[in-house]
Image (tube, rainbow, N blue to C red; front, side, top):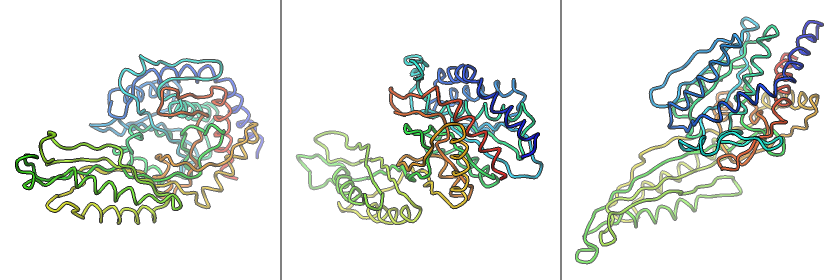
Length: 388
């Protein structure tokens, strides 16, 4: 390294070392805004909070608007003309209903922060913002940096996925600031997921006087659930769960309609293709003659698999962590994330680079405040070392 690059590295790390109070202040602000995936107003309000913060830091932003879900926001730090950018990514939405931030606002007990979305993943968004600001303050980076703040990951990114994939195709590296595992590890593999709804149409009839004239949609649903659950294969890593069901109009009526919602998880694209062939066969089969089945909604995630290039970046990241006093390993998780989209378009991807937290999607969700600065410094140092 040249003396100027060593000086810049020192300046960036020293500045980040002092930012815990400011990071905590911004984190409190965004956690205390309801931003459930379907609450466009709230998700965009979190976006505005970050836009205002970036503006104060002299970092330009732009929006990719969407009419139904929150807009995607990009923050830009210039550098290394002609080089591919490094993408720092995260989502602003949470799984919690409106009013949760008022009922359970941001709070701190010792070194632990609580609140809706505090770990998953508003702390990661804050960390990314400060890393971007550090490079902006001290002369940029050898390559452009893009902070991507998306809006609907918790429902499989129906509006954000095209933006994510477009940014990832042009990216040198992707760091996704999902929470670091409770062990302190990052994530090197995730299952993909399919979420779909299907509807069965039968024929109503009086269940006492004309039972034989009815065609039970609930009976068909019961048969399909049994067959779908048989597709779970723990050795392969494929699971199916029919998690929500509804049907029928009255206890004394043969059910003319039934519906179900299904969660499918898989480790590889090949496993996804295999299980979907099996699912399609089940849905196309009428176990109760005369019923008709149709899929009414479908969306999902792609699996995160570690390529050779991703492993190289992961090694750079963990070595940087070691220099910051952290021991960071790699973990596989059954949970899905936007990092699957970036990996599947070929971008070297490391996930779970955010501050350490746990119990996501529950009232006990927490984030370790003492990990914000070390994880930010690790990310910044890894970025500076990518060229080597």
